[in-house]
Length: 178
Image (cartoon, rainbow, N blue to C red; front, side, top):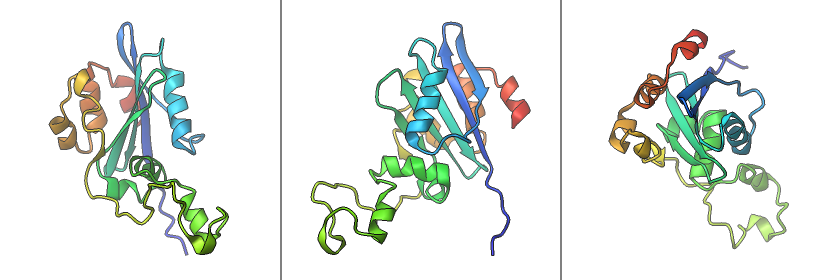
């Protein structure tokens, strides 16, 4: 029996442009992997400038993925334990913890060629490692933009608005779709 509860996410992209920061809401319908989210952010970039992909889940947690051109993305999640219990949040926490989402499937059926489900020798991830309660990831993700780690960790349900404010980005268009 399902509870019928609908999971509500809010997602936005904050893209740096020559004129400043531009905010836009975004749909996560086609985002199934972290790579999809990164591609979505890179698609919003102007001349390989910085883009922040922001995901918020019902004031329980928020995540920021920073994409700077073709560099590896930086990820921050406000509450890893809460995020890990949701689809988009687990996508972020799995990456931060070095977990492969396919590990869950591998544990059900031994398809990797090892005997008796024996772990691969070159796999450093621990699929049974506990997910920490609280922040996880790059706390300095916004430091060079003006927000120190301490300030980021203090954010709550209005995190996107606080980050946009700090960047000097208008939230008018986004507030209408919230």
